[in-house]
Image (cartoon, rainbow, N blue to C red; front, side, top):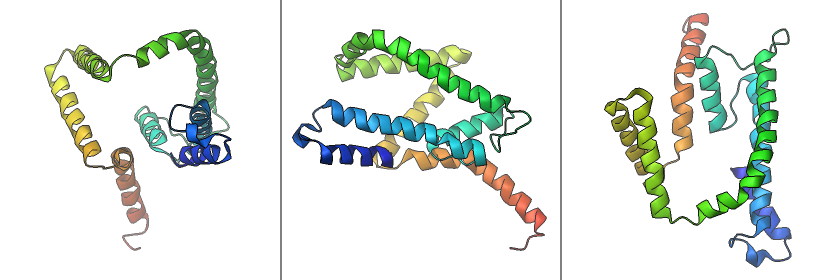
Amino acid sequence: MVPTLISYGLEKRISRHPERFGTGAIEGVAAPESCNNAAAVGGFVPLFALGIPSNPFNAVLIGALMIYGLTPAPVDSEKPGPFLGDCGQHVLGNVMLVFLNLPLIPLWVKVLRIPYTLLSIIILVFCFLGTYSLNNNLYDVIVMFAFGVFGYLIDKYGYEPAPLILAFVLGPLLEVRFRQSMIVSDGTS
């Protein structure tokens, strides 16, 4: 987030027409987006080298990898399969995005013309249908709705959701490591 804001501010400062920023000028969109993409990919270096997530997305990713029994760090030189697989997925995903998104740009522009109220209702219906169809259980829909209300309240009162996600993903891991360190040190600090 911070690099994106810095990139936007720098681009606005060096622009010949800074008054156009905030109105959808391509320079104000392209510079922060390219910076965001570079920062997002760069965040994988400490994740795979040290096992340290550098942003909330990587914290969720490390949690998902641990659920499936994959330890993301350090990169095992004798079994580099998971690391190389992840790198290959990123390359393949970017190539697929180019071939999928370029022809679909006119469609994405039309989606932006849908009124927000109608678009939010459509998204909400798809969320309910997807949640219900996963297990055919109404309880799942109630849980999804409760977490939606919780997310709305967090946003309404100005709380940041990223620390909550980090605590949710890394909290149990921190407790296990704390117990291990206390056992090793015989309870002394």
